Length: 219
Length: 132
Image (cartoon, rainbow over all chains, first blue to last red; front, side, top):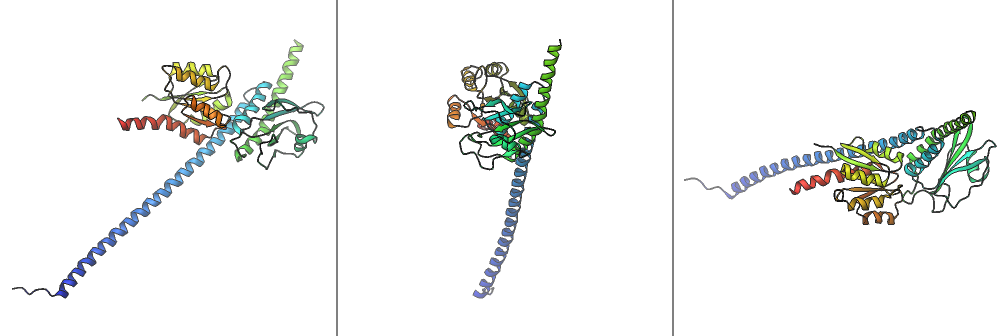
């Protein structure tokens, strides 16, 4: 005949069981916590990779824009084609449908030679320092309006076309497209590119046209 | 497996070059057309899997080309992304009304364009396979 367990012994045994069970739960909890932490870490890592991918994709796109702009500008020595390329860069890569291109003639007067979206405007010839655009051109750099366009036809940017020390022309960009609320850093780089590459492309095309005309007269 | 074909339609060499550069690394063959008429002709003869269609073009506008593509027996179901310069609601609405599948606005954002192209070329067939 076995002696019956006392209530105290039952309680002690049950307490022991519960303790073991609780220890097991704590270990399980610890494992789950580690798994969650690892998942969160992986998630963060994934987010970082996504952000990095988007950043690289954007950077590659920006470089593509600059490459396309410079490639197109130097792909022809025909004046009309170069002018059309400058317009296309402003319309398609910068995002404005109001652009005017000016050329400086032998007397130092700037005259409009191409314009898009500004049919109702008449641009009087001006000299450096005269008028809105002429004043910006003597500031020795690209003028970029710090205020976002307010819907009026106002100057957004003015890019001098410079070859050596001479300003041979200018590109004036007016209102941006409705969905483009402000200029991006890439646009500033495109303006820089226009200032140098559009100027040389336009200069070469003009020289080519003059030499063609002289050849035609000579023959 | 045959590579998918994308027809890029724009009268601007700048935009065509830009689109080609953006899509060059994808597993797609790129075909180009420089006006609406050529686009409709190539859509019918080359059977591209996707068309990127500019709105303002000589000879035939993008909207007219889209209508012709939707009316053609062999081209009516082709996915078309309109490429618009003006993002005004009316322009986008006209695109939807004529049956375009999506649109992107110029200046083209490479990340956005790639996402839309992948979505129309890759995710749609994958979903269809799941149903089978």
